[in-house]
Length: 227
Length: 274
Image (cartoon, rainbow over all chains, first blue to last red; front, top):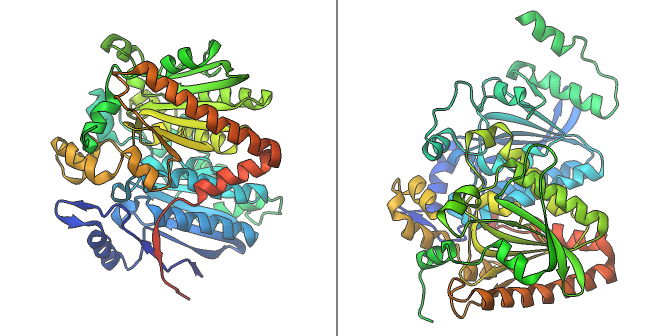
């Protein structure tokens, strides 16, 4: 069941770039995607485990985080907490949404405040970082989760590779900012390929909440045998 | 004073002769001692920390530190913190909590450092943890934007019980140059971007994000001591209010108010949908 589908962006700055008003840009993105915003939230069940779910759609203005993204995220986290559900977020983003200026920037603390509701009730909060995930999303809720998972090969960071190369005039090494690189540097808990995500998410939630798991095969063992 | 454009304010906010965090620490605190290091990796010169007497009590000060010369700016990485800077801020914040000391922060950075090594050491992780530590802080917190409030790198020290801004300070989601490069594909259109982005202290106050604009009858680089004095007076006033709030209602209530404040920011349309 979808939550808060009625929220859509306002235009707090009356922002116009290259002759195009922000509301027109939003309308085009809505038309293309069939969604009102870059974040879709709702209730779901993963292999029998009830969860609150938030999924970022990169096709919608680069899944940039503005007021609606932040508000829908916050409401979903709080509603998951109220309904005793774990909260799972598929995070992908180009960063904060320029068109809403400082309102976008202040969605960072908003999302971090919202997940306190899950901490208070000791409910799992797990993020899955999906390619690409950068900027304000990586520097807020995505990296304060109880567990941080990523998809293989996903590119994840604070500053984008182009910015880093421009500023430092350094050539970036191969694999820099990949999920594998982040795992090695201690920034994420595990890399999980998409076909295994359901099973793994349900397994982690059951383990964290001290419930018997139904998953018969250790994922680590399976990964070893895949090599 | 004549009407300044947003781009004029950007130039003033970035002026090298503007007082920086250590100037405020020296002028406003008695017997200050600088505190160093994150206890994990190294001491970041772009974020300074100090303990000292402010009026009748001990306080902790944290702030971004830019240089007053090119040489000093290189040593300070132009005030752009690396992850160890944010981790130092978190450590010092916990120190303040242990001793129940109020925390004052001075915001003045173009951005968090966007370098290769900062990424390796988890820049995004350091910023989100710092935001969380400030939001959870069990002591009164006050922030003043004294110059440039550049994006997440500035925000990490700014999510306090009170957010004050100097008249010629700015706070932006990205630098006008970056915004122009992204949206106009032309960094030279930064003056136009600065206007469009609504980044001045007056606008942040109008949006309800900044609590107060501290006047600069003369721009801070022309009247450092007057500016620092006015900032000190505003801080004293807000600190008294916060301490009274803390005293009357306790830390849990005060923190609840802080959370409510940041939880509420944003504007959107909402249609009834079943």
